[in-house]
Length: 134
Length: 393
Image (cartoon, rainbow over all chains, first blue to last red; front, side):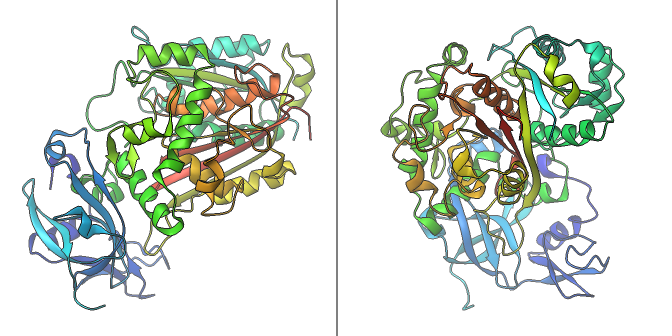
């Protein structure tokens, strides 16, 4: 992860630990079975402190996307332009991520699949065009 | 609701070299109190958004001003904090806990930007932000994501968004302080804008261009509210707080990011005021980006959801066009001032309009709305809506 984003956080650390193993994970409440994302201990649906990690198949649909053309931080500025998107994964969680490749492939509604990219010393879950059938 | 705004002041400069945020706050506080015929000794309720920094920021401001208020409120909801402060001040003054409420703002974001991450990301070290920053999400990108989804769902075009920037610039050019500011800020295009000018400016985060984005300036201001029994004795005619609303929104699994918390805070404020959007003469709507205005127009009910584009595209929001409210008549954050948290300027210009003192004065303006959008649309945000009137309800 980038230094700018690193926090010692008992909620999201497990997400990044899984990413290091090229696994995309989300939360599932063991009481109400609600999907929890971002991952956190306390379930925002029922209040139980019973959220456990589950592994996503990594297939999703672009909810919206933008091409970032200017950035104040040097490590991102040199990567401009790049495409950011909110992606709705098939398991029911929405994650902010980066779409790899041509921005034309990041149209709203496009099917995408997770792809892990080395970035700032961290494996970052991004997406690339194409996904298994929903 | 017998609480009124009795005093206002806006710091005149957009570049304030040699000033600190606290100095700007104190300067504006004293000027707004003088406008209200009061002094710091009269202030017994202090509201502070924390932009001048430090821990326990409201206490630091109280100490700097040399006051020991009985009510202190350090609500920080980003740029909407001042609309939320008005809601809280009305609550406190009506309950009899205080009689004179002071709101202040001071920022040197332009001339002395804080070190480290962009200051608009004040909630940097939260789990939610830790799930956005590593991919490079910044504020304009979040609004770009919102605008892209809005375009997808409703067909909103870049030209429709651009019209908001065009109208707002026309208002700024009537405001000498804004005109001077555009020069002091070295803005590339300082005159009238066309839709083509906006569309020809560089893209920042698709579909938003440079001229869809607010300025980054220094600035500040202050607002004084008084309890009902103090209103009759003030030098300026009172501007009454008729209704308020506040609400929180954030992106979540399956949520619709094109609808903001304004859909809650707006109707709440209008209902309390007993008015409808059709009654409003002046709409002071937070304009961090053109899309911020467009979704506010929809969520407050000036037009239906999804119809913001067609609603704005004929320029009906200009100050001299009857049949629709005048938008951001001081020149807005797009073309007058945006030091990071613009909410106080929405209140100040709304009061100017209802006093008849605006540089883009709507004839016989009787009702205004100030609607703040704090935080980041598309990620997490707080809206505050305040309906103000020339006459008491």
